[in-house]
Image (cartoon, rainbow, N blue to C red):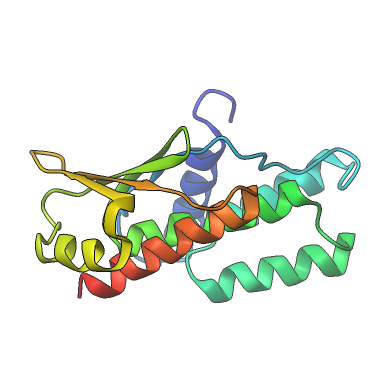
Length: 177
């Protein structure tokens, strides 16, 4: 697991399980997220390492909002109120799912903003006009072989910034249809 990384390990494990059950798997694009938010399970919240790995795996395998809500409910039921770091981890799982729907391949943080790299084969230029109308001077678009958008975040608290990114991705995915 250390050699391939945790997300890849969970993905491979899920594929093997589905293959053993005879379920055909569809290769989905891996979304890279590089945000400098505290997002982990603290030792004092879940002390047992195997339980911690199980929760990380459950979060990594979420593909829908229903999955995320089920995992969130399970975590709260088993371990109590989630600390900020776990809330951030859940929000990043949401961001990953929304990014997939919005055809975003990579999200990275730059000072008080984020950079979203879009899949050039699925990017719709009409999206830019809609974004400019809604976000005005908070966005910058860079066309090219790999189009990307830089969004200036307004919020200052980590969880609020994550919610702001979610809102942008939600707008991006619904406006792109």
